[in-house]
Structure formats: C-alpha cells, structure tokens
Image 1 (cartoon, rainbow, N blue to C red):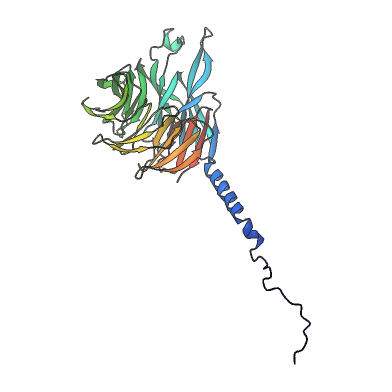
Image 2: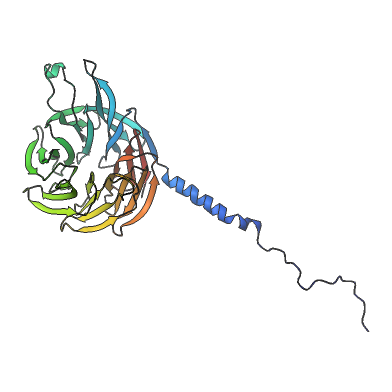
Length: 377
C-alpha cells in the first residue's frame, strides 16, 4: 500500500547555484592593478636632482666609489662686459646618498661634452667645446682667451679650480683617466683626429694624429686608450666606422652595416665590444649594433627603438647596455642574448647615461635640466 507524501515534487533539471565566490571574479582586475603599480614603481627614480641651471644635461660621470655624481650642463645664459649673450657651461657635483648639490663649477662657453674622475676620485675633469667671449680679467691682461676648447680640473672636496689645460680649436670628444693618472684626450676638427695626453703640470702633448676619409660624426676611445672608433662617411653616402690603433695610427677595421648617421658610440668596459647607435628618423629603424673590436665583426643588431637613439652606456659587467631615446624612454638590453630586458619611461629625452661602479644605479640626464637615478640591480 502506497502512502501519500507531503514533499513537493522537484523538477528533473533544477537550476544549480553558482559555486564561484564573488572575489574570484575580481581577481584578474586585482592582478592587473598590482602589475601596473609594480611597473610604475619600477619606473620611478630613486632620486630626482633638479639643477638650477636651465640648460640641458649633456654629460654624466660617477666617482669611483659612487658617492658623487658629476653632471655637465649647457645653456646657462651669461654675458660679457659688452652685454653679449653667450651660452655658459657648468659642472655640478651631487652627493648621491643625500641627493644634495655639493658644488657648482663654472666652465667655458659651448658644450661640456665629457667629464671624468681621477682613479682616486679626488679630481674631476671637464672638457668645454665652443666659442667664448673675450676674457678681459686681470689674470689674462685684457687679452682674448685662446683656449676655446679647454679642459678644467677641479678639486672634488672643495670645488676649487685646480688648473686650466689650454686646448686647441679642435672639438673635445673624450676624457679618459688611465690608471697611472695620465689624462688622455680625443679631439676632432673636420676629418682630423688628434689623440693627446697630459700630466701635471704640463699642457696637452700630442700622441697621434689621424686623417680620416670625411667629416667626423662621433669619436670614442677604449678604456685602455689603445683603440679609437671614428664614425664618418664613405664617399659622403654610406656611414662607416673606422677602428684605429691609437699607438701606431694604423687602421684596424672598417665597420659597415648602418644605413644612417652614427652619432653615438661607446666601448664596453673591458674594451672588447663597441656599441653604435644611429640617429634615424621614423619610419627608418633606429638600430644599435654591437661589434667585436678584436675581429671587426658584427656580433648582433638590437632592434626595438622606434625613435632616435640619443645616448649609450655599458654596465660595468659588460652584460647590460642601455640607450636613451627621443621618445622619452630608456631601454636596457641583455648583451649576451641581444634581448630587450626592460623599458623605463624616463619622462624626458635622455642625452647622457652612466652607471655606478657596482652597476646597481643608473643615472640619466637630458633636455629638462633634471637628473634621475634608478635602481637597476
């Protein structure tokens, strides 16, 4: 006998309740937010050093211990006794631990293109390029200053000018302090390359004079002072790079492969590689090439810059290369693989980049007279 039931009959296919927690629905958005914040933090500099000079930062160098950063600027307005306006240069020394300005060192007119610290970090040298007004101070007895392309040496601790090394009318491209404290200089005028050196208290003594094929776009000197890289033109049509033996003046290799002007070159710290970057405008690629200095062969081509390459720098371990770009970014490349490791939004066009000796801090300066320091290591 069947007994009646009081339960309500259930449909065969009843709708099921969702077992997904609501917080899981927002997980992708949360992860994207975390990634965005991490990326923004990675692009944020450790310090931003704001120069009182309204000019561009065109050169940077860390002291050997990384505690002092020297920046070279151009664009500070000044005038001579006749009221003639001219562009002054300054070297500014910064304490990297407190982000404070230590000294402002006045230079000559034009562009302070290169800065170098002595091996013990006690002296900083700066080379000025450009024309200057007539110097009518008492020390010069009212005569015009002929050292238009001069080198100045300052004491890092006090900021005092130690001496001025008279130059020539040839543009100064490079200042290198060798381990023996000898200061080596690299100059160019039209298609002539001049290598010189100086020791206390003498003037620049010529080492080597080289006549290249055409007008010179850029020069670089290997850290040991033995190899010169010269960017020029072949028959005024094809950009080439010549590698010269700095001691003998012998042409070692001619590097071909770029399709546009090469205004940026830098040797790796061990001197075995040369990086060269072009100044191509869109839609042409702004490539960077890595060359083997000992063989003259191309190692690899780094593609990924959509805008003009403005500066180059190697990390001390030779494994990282960075470049500034006119699209306000900095790119970090893995040298062994040739892969792009990281892109930093610098916020301005960088014209100078440099690493600390341990490779953990990168400094960049550019068109807005602001210097930024990033943690890389």
